[in-house]
Image 1 (cartoon, rainbow, N blue to C red):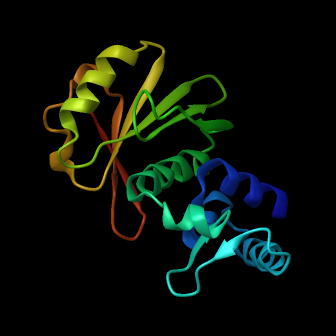
Image 2 (image 1 turned 135 degrees about the vertical axis):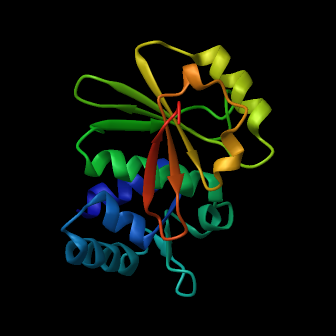
Amino acid sequence: MEKQIYHLLRQFGVLRRTQLDAFFPGKEKAVRKAIRKLCQRQDIYVNGLTGFVAVNEAAYKKKDDGMLEALWVLAELKKRGLAEQFFQAGKEEYPIRIVVIGRKEMYDILYVGMEEELLAESVLKRIYLPDCKHLVAVRDLKAVRTLPAGQIFAIGHVKPDGEVVFYDAGE
């Protein structure tokens, strides 16, 4: 468990404790124990006030709320058994993009914040692959109103508590 948590933190920099629980459903005690051990060995940084867990303090200071939203969508895919491998795509193409490989399908999670619709629309047109299911993670559903529905598989609406509700892109 320690190795898996450390790998996630190395990959994404910072996560909420509740997100780590979501990545390992039913193993919350093991997650807490692993965090404690990693923290004791000073392999990770835990902010006592916010509850964020980071690979180090510098990563915590650079945390990105959009990435945290996209990670909720990834955790939900993992919980549903749809995510076997995943990685953060390069930021030169789009600021927050996670590529997910499942059993027989590939997903592409893009976080779209308010005022980012034009950038997201441009990227979706450039990277659109018919065999890839493009998911858009949002905190506010208004952020997706101008995106090309034909290129989006689903919208993952992330609620304040981290719950993800998926909507068909045509709805």
